[in-house]
Image (cartoon, rainbow, N blue to C red):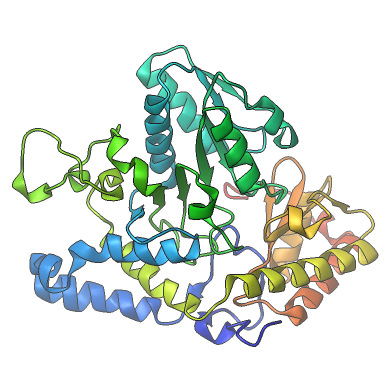
Length: 397
């Protein structure tokens, strides 16, 4: 692995845990808790409302947005932070449909994360127009980009299998057909090199609690290509997206930047955690990160297939065709994952039968991979998953 990786000393991780679920919830960066205590006690506690100016809370959303921009290949000023990923999907899709008023099709794929499709369905119900959502298999997206498509809404990395869409190719095809491109980067921001500016995509959205380690409930982000910003008519015209929020004008006048896509009061405590979490990326070359991710995941696949023949690889075998996760299918995958977690190796499960493992080179190394494989071999080979205590399905899988 590159000399700069891993950076385990920058994270608070239990010594007896191999954490292969950073693709679902990232680990706690050291210093984040102490920083939040300062924000709560010294800023909120002592400065009270004065902290908006004296601690410069008001600038934090843009400051964090600019730091995220550097990790996704976007220019400063093009990324707004706050709210949730679902809201950002809604905003981007609404803006895209308004940009193509004569078209009635939203194209996604059957591997998209459900909330993206739910938000699309909700938007259609709200605007009350005769739109359809088309969801072909991921590998069939390109041939379904036809001249009736208003917007293409895709998650870059499939949350179940890790399958990776070709961002540049799909974006080009969408725009050649006259459609607007929206990328959901939930499983790729912080996981692999991205070049949003180079792709020419109109919009991208993402969350920050996975590979960016912003913590549970961390704010989402939205990217808008700078040249289209002033054409965006926000569906959710919140006061923080106003050009002068404290002018308290009765009519909405959007900010002349991506900031117009902000909605509510920024979540300062969560933004403060995320701001500190982004410190761990200082000096990290995303190409090095990607190389380390591939090396770890390739070793994992080889070991699992040699040790656990009952598991079936559900991710693309070509490492260039997948993100930073590996999924195996197993009929008793939920129970097996619970047995694995019980023995200190944490991954997760996605219905109907996917055991999912995330590779985060910031805090994982080859020894972690080998230990995980040894425990997995024991769980599967000895059928430890059959224990009754692993059969009850929890609310969060």
